[in-house]
Length: 113
Length: 113
Image (cartoon, rainbow over all chains, first blue to last red; front, top):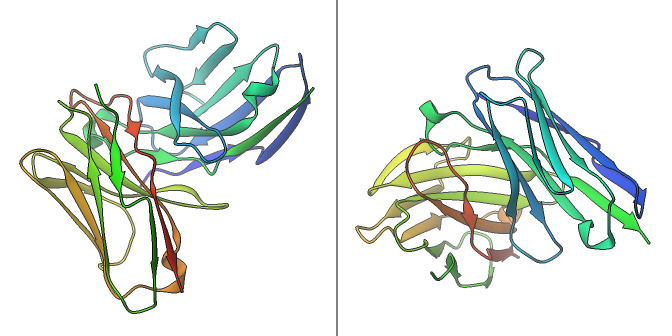
């Protein structure tokens, strides 16, 4: 089955700096890669996603890149703010497997004011 | 539209007991997935239902089971509870056209004593 590895497990950055979280996946059939943000005590919420026919996607301060050959994808947050502090999960799935989504183990991001 | 709801929000059980958790998806969503979230393990996929049929199953023992009703509401059952079953159980709903964004419920916090 699919295996998703996520690094780092914790990340501290100064406010205004950039943060990068990296994930690798094992199943070459995976074609959908969402990123979820989970604030303390709250439910995970989708912040950005990318499909395998696209190499990069950006939404304001958040961007995701995908390298299908290397089977890795990354989340980039620029100009970090204290409200970006949360746990971020990457995930991978393939349309042939319907909604069987495999999540990474999460990255706890702390933005220091 | 109302979001995904889960009941109960908190449960305390003792070893050997069984428990049933409920999830009501967003209106119009026919896919419901269940996840177990524990510290350090991220979100682990339990199973996914669509139109009352289990389409995918994760690597959990047979003590974990579920079902989906004709109105897309889903239940998850854990029998013969073990201490290690203590976790936050999240359900997520999505539209079923390929693989799409999942909307999570607030979760049920299960504590096994």
